[in-house]
Length: 264
Length: 263
Image (tube, rainbow over all chains, first blue to last red; front, side):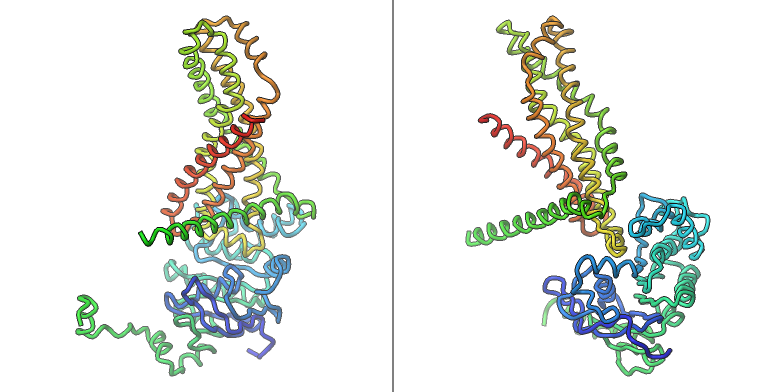
């Protein structure tokens, strides 16, 4: 993919929960129209990074630039304007449980636009059709399977025709077939709408299918950024271990005994 | 013993932090309810009406029944003392004044806390656990505007309205018991009731009920927003919501009763 102006530039991002530093000096760039995967193990800070990117967690230091404008320094009004151009698909879908699928998808349209109800109705149908949920307009989220909820969440994220979409663990908790379907959907959205996509995941299978660029996190720091090939050639031990799916070295016997008994 | 100042200090800081968070929530609610509509940002009136129906209209059967029974109890209890002096006709006065100034607002508030205060906490808490609140925020929808303001408006209207109904039913409960059980003449009872009541009594009851409504809603919302973890957190905060809000209702009641005692 040709180099272009970055869509998002993250500069030296630091996020703390109390005394605990979860992200420590994270920097990377997401280019227009690519699928950018944030990869990392449990506790690597990848979910926190995503929450910071969409503005749910305020960073302690550093900047997040969208088209060169600092998201962290914006006023509430500017922030809402920017959010209209963002979509987010949550790990647990986060559909409002008390209203139907159609109402969920229509919600941002009703609140942010002055469109006629009939237009909103058509747009809602299109979005649901897009994710393969045509005909499920009047179902409540609780009546759907996990994979369908995920798809509905993506339809809602697409409601405002965003420029960028964030996916939090899109294939977590789904069986391989359904998960592959979601991966395909992410690809389709990006290809059809030239949609910049940021995907947080720990599933290597998805990464291989969808990633244009990968940023790998460990303990709140970036241990590798680049294309999948570049990362695979990385000589960083953690990156190699992750790609080889090798467990941590086990305790040495004597160290294990010490840890158990607390004796020297 | 050395720890006592430390504990007191931490407790105080903690309470101040809670106070600060509640104040922020209050200011935000007021802004989205009063200032934002003036700037043309709109109010979710339909949701507010739905909440009014849920908090108010649907609570009428239980509030009505309880208040009728409390009216009966008030009449019989006061007859126990007044009857000894041959002053059973004053049951009417006692029931009417206590119903309007005290018992009807209090019983209504406590019942609505149990019914709707807990429901508000559970709903917002579940939404928080399910990332629904985060989802609203990412969509550029302010959770206070979308969720809290309609509940607040519904509650602010529901509690006084239900209280007025409760007042009448409680007086009727007293009338029912006095006439059928104690044997007071119905016309005397009605006359005594109308004589003893003034606008001031109704006003005092209504003022109390407005503040009860504010307390129920804010405690409910605040506790819901405090939910952490999963279903367990929701249960914990829901219990705490009901207890805190009944406690606050009694405190508010005390403050107003003392205030109007001197005024």
